[in-house]
Length: 94
Image 1 (spheres, rainbow, N blue to C red):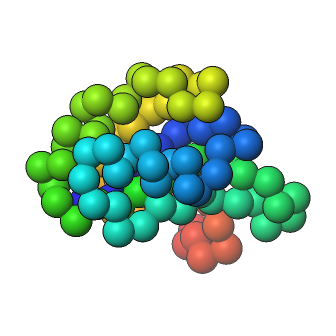
Image 2 (cartoon, helix red, strand yellow):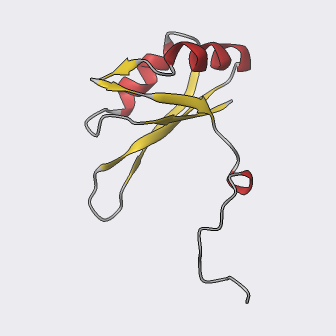
């Protein structure tokens, strides 16, 4: 299961994020999204866990918990095509 983690401390490292979720099961990947212009964290990331039951438990336990001094938001990630909203863009048709 792919998990979305928001409101991360800008200083949180991927290893710290991974460790928080490993307490609930095997983590196959942990990625903090970095702004390509500044090289700084954007304050959110994704964790992938192979066991859906462990992932669900991690979401329940870690949502609204403290990580590196910030209260994080944790939920199941939605596929890109299901996020909705018109973000504008160059391929819009009028």
